[in-house]
Amino acid sequence: EPANYYYRGLSYCETGQYEKGISDLSKTISLKPALYETYLDRAIAYNFTKKYDKALLDINIFIKNNPADPRGYFNRGDVFEKANKIDKALADYNRTISLDTAFYDAYCNRAAIFLYLKKNEEAIKDYTHAIQLDSSDIRNYFGRAEAFRNLNQPLDAIADYKIILEIFPNLDKAIYDLATTYYEAKEYDNALLNYTRYISLDPKKTEGYLARARVYDALGDKENAANDRVKGRVK
Image 1: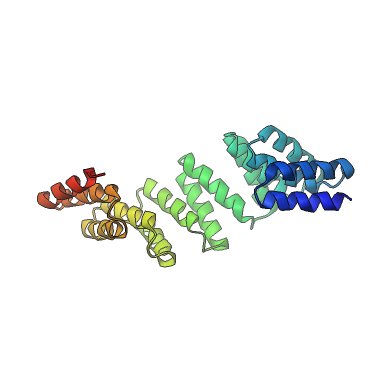
Image 2: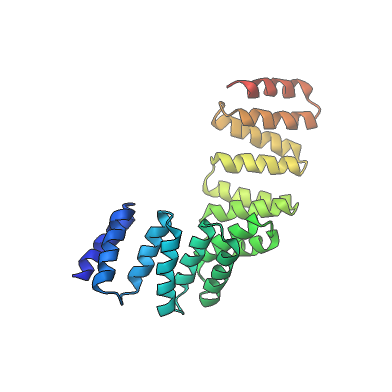
């Protein structure tokens, strides 16, 4: 019965047993080749196992038979992105969004590509749209903050880091990035406060001392700067 292989294959894939999943999905296709959803599922499994050529073959079969389904273009874009075919990935994400303007993952992935390409304004638009669709995913705030910093808009970046810290008050990366953005904005007192906060979470992380030393230098406090550099060299 094709359904038995299909659902067992999905279960294997959901638990990370992709080779077993691919085997069962292939059996499903051999028994019922017109079940085109199976090609998409197998393509996703191939993508996870970095078999990009096989993934593309399956996705193209799915797209040919489901040309209005945005999932085909999204998953093909994801394969292209992982295979470092950025232009093709962008084209497919664009197609995905044209078919479904609320396709959350397409905005996230396209935003990350725009950020990588230093197209910061476009990245900010996509991250903002993604945040409107799901305000709980902190990755979008991190990405948008980075784009703001690239555009020399530190206050906007600071606002995004503060949102992250409202959700996760002790997230060390957000605290460190917030402190660094304050430093870039020459708000040295706030930078000092947040680097100290970062150090307090894990005093063994030497990069906090070295970063705080730069702030002390900017404030003209050479003694504390020197002390922090000593602590920063201790492994």
